[in-house]
Image 1 (cartoon, helix red, strand yellow):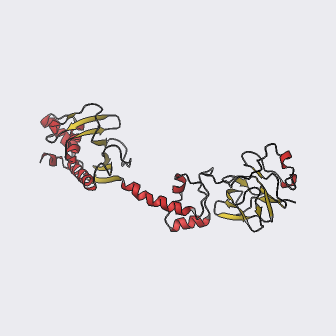
Image 2 (spheres, rainbow, N blue to C red; image 1 turned 45 degrees about the horizontal axis):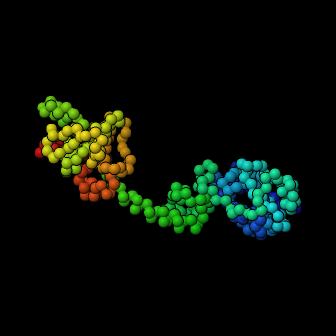
Image 3 (cartoon, rainbow, N blue to C red; image 1 turned 90 degrees about the vertical axis):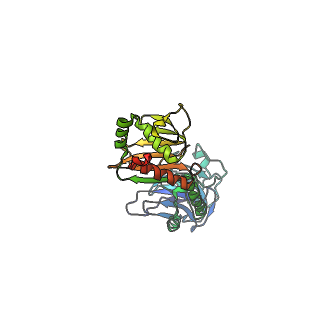
Length: 328
């Protein structure tokens, strides 16, 4: 009689198991002590042996699929099958080995037999429920070495993961600092914001009524050179030509001019911080923080050197806290 391999019960509360990987393909010869497949429950991943010498006559579920405890998921025959079967639980129900004693009549009983060439074991890219498929040993080694298995998923490396896959994961992890080094992100805090009071004074004393132009002037002066500055709010963007000199010389730039610096004014929004990544030009973002501000600078490393980035952020934050600095 063919030997039916069922989904084992590995825990008292377990009602199903997830097949992580098949270690044998249809038609393969197996010994009773050979590992046939890996199954994952809520608590562990376990290797399950074939339980009988013979040949894999049928695999009735694919890697990445769940099967109820007690359901037949594989059949081992004493004789080498002429037409070994591989099925998905989603594509058809499980078949009892008793219906095909030596799998000789499989072709007649099965309207859609699998071709005689045995396919390679299935390794799904992503499990159906998003879980990462890996053996307990791999999980332990990854944890000990500070490696994140999710990076293999992001790279599209097929699951389940084995010890050999950790070498690829190490190479991915060493690439991460290089990518991070290509971007700069700095933040500064301003304990008490003095710009609003300064803008009101500038309007009254110097008829400078465009607060966005004042912000552009502060940003351009902090950059240390003539620049086109884009001032963005949640609803609009305005471009300003900022030359060296007094704030009264700031004018609106030609529409669609490429900016040298972007200033996002989010003081009136609920946003308290940003991490948007570098764009075509350096970007300063203003967020309210109680009576003060949080100023964030994001840029590509090619846009500003480390020293230039620190200088820009320091100067701009100082001007927002004490605008009189701009007049000195």
